[in-house]
Image (cartoon, helix red, strand yellow):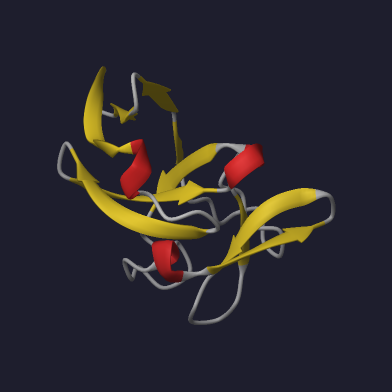
Length: 108
């Protein structure tokens, strides 16, 4: 596994998600300001559609989540686990910033 430079930190709009390709995988990256950056698989486990980056950010049961745009399942941004069905998981990715650059850990 290795860190992949995805973008400049300033190019991530706060409070929303963007999709990026990381080593051939679609990754949803969320900039939540004071709460930090999060990265999960962009593929919605319930539908197989690549769209989680377009979901609405919310807090449920004390957890920061993204609501899938299609059927509104809520995925925890830390663990990727669906709050309504723990069998559904949008795999989380390690994410960090260095010198104004955003890096995501590529999964092999």
